[in-house]
Image 1: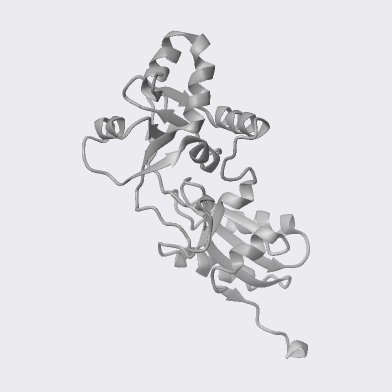
Image 2: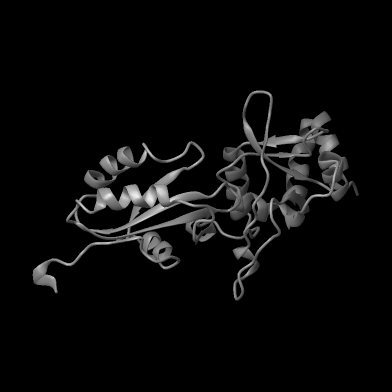
Length: 244
């Protein structure tokens, strides 16, 4: 029986072999390059794993996450020692479904768009082949910001102090699978989120850096409540006289 590398070569030459290649691929272990060692929270199933993976850019400017059919293929690509991790391919696809990936870059390989990855996950689900999770909320985790964000919190504090409908505000990093962490601003508020989020986002756009992607959510949503549990609020509205 052909191994994954041989099936990939055969699929490139003969389109009729692609189905067998994909069926084998999603059941196989593949290798990925990590920026940092793999971390896994205690008490969680393996599905709770978080990987910070490198990305590469093709000549057209498209961003991909590289993964490899063997450790040897990974070494040939990296040309030096790197942190790596072995993971079932279907589980990897489930973690990176909002991104695109390329198998064995700089060699005989194959690109997978985010739409193709989602289609593979859907087919796997229909065939009852288990992946980590098909619920996007399950692959999102939250953590305190790993770099200084005082330029954002100071500006947000100044803006929010003039908003009577906001009681508290929280800022943390949101990690979705292995995609680059985003900044998430959670607001404990009442009233229309649109009327608050639009002017607030325009105000904070003046101070956020080009590398910072800021998202907003209300604590009325379960996702907002879960995220707010990870950090202390950077803004708490002063109590009015009749509230004391």
